[in-house]
Amino acid sequence: MAWREVQAWRLTRPVSPRTIETTMWRFWTLAAAAVLWAMPSLTGQAAAQPARRAITVFAAADLAFAFKEVVPLFEQRSGVRVTLVLGSSGLLARQIEHGAPADVFFSADRALVDDLARAGAIIPETQSLYAQGRIVLAVSKRAGVALRELGDLLRPEVRRLAIANPDHAPYGRAAKEALQALGLWERLRPRLVYGENIRHTLQLLQAGAVEAAIVALSIASVPEVDVVLIDPRLHGPLDQMAAVVRRSGRPELGLAFLQLVQGTEGRPIMKRYGFLVPGES
Amino acid sequence: MPDLFPVWLSLRVAGLATLLTLAIGLPLAWALARRRFPGRDLLEAAVVLPLVLPPTVLGYYLLLLIARRGPVGRAFDAAGIELAFTWRAAVLAACVGSIALLIKAAQAGFESVDERLEQAARTLGRSEWGIFWSISLPLAWRSVVAGTVLAFCRALGDFGITLMVAGSIPGLTQTLPLAIYDHVQQNRMAEANALALLAVAGVTVLLMGLGRLARLRF
Image 1 (cartoon, each protein chain N blue to C red):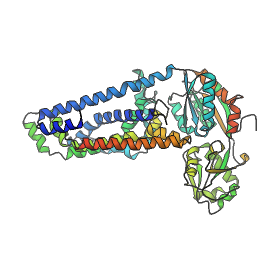
Image 2 (image 1 turned 90 degrees about the vertical axis):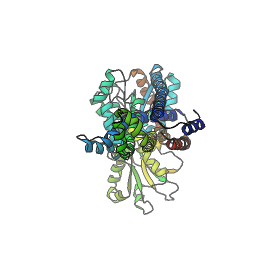
Image 3 (image 1 turned 90 degrees about the horizontal axis):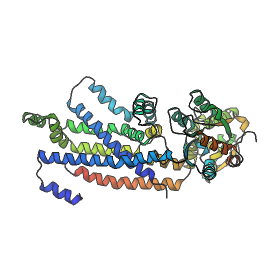
Image 4 (image 1 turned 45 degrees about the vertical axis):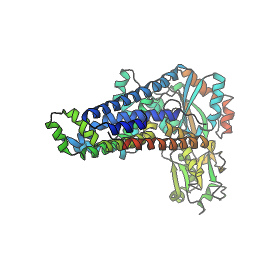
């Protein structure tokens, strides 16, 4: 009914309980129509998904850039469509524990995969160390401060320093360990800002909220920042582990993806995006 | 141009969530305004809790409930319906996040209705059901519409609860706010900006339309 007609109908009809109930029924008919409109398309979408050869990859946020290359490569090689879900490893692990439809999980933290193995949520034989992360000091070009080493963070121009939350993010934990190893942690503490995950930490820098940040090398290649490598001996190894999820209906496809990342084609990509690959340096 | 699936998904999820919110929230709001029963004050406090709790916390507990091993999830699983990590979970998430807004607004609306009008209808032999539809709801209409609009907007914008219970699976459960966040995560700022702009423009137009609906009498 056009708006004008509604107006006219309102003005001419006297308001009596009868018309009110008619309105009511129109309201509910409209509501029911809306439900019917929304439902089948949603279920159709959900049902159409698993019928095709497709896998869902849950991956840690630090893989955002590297997997932009790995995923199309795998799709091209195997003809399998990949749905990539990026997030903080901790959240993704909780979701897999509660039955999320992931086929393979790439964690930034090996402890999370070990926990999932104990909970029986992944296939333990597929557990593999696929990379080691590196941390870097990233400095905003706009801030106009040139930093060459972690000690320079004490300079007064660096008002805020962002790291990932060391309580749950592995890169945050590594950043904290490196600062502690150099005796800078206590002195820098009042200037620290915690990011929710490693991508969010870099965003704080990209948005200009902080002058410097300690982030993963794998995501630091954005135009707005300069990067200084941090000696990996200053912190515990950032072992990144992946595994095929037990609930997966096609474990062989997840395993194939995992093997591609670790194979001759995946390793150079991972290295190019700043990961250390196991067995090489 | 970014994939527009999240836009349609969000509209549908928010629409369904609003209907679910109305179906649960209106009777609750009416009961809170008109009925005295044990635990009423507790219920009144409890309906506002979703606004106070951090969305991710709320999402985590909702996930425990609706996951396949959770108490609610198990019942639905037995019926062959999967809740967690599907669009249904997104609807539930949006509903949980927004229901307090509708209940509080509608409750205030029902409370402002002159009880003598309802009494008069009762003396004239109208059923309680009829009184609700022909007296209470029409007189509280503006508050109900205001609450519905607020609830719809909150449902459309939900992030934290949806992320927890539905995941951010592209093409399946990735709603508009999650898609924007995902684009930012992957440094695709052009797509993120396009979607954000679309969301702002689209919702503005929608709200202008809803504003007219609110002026329309019951």
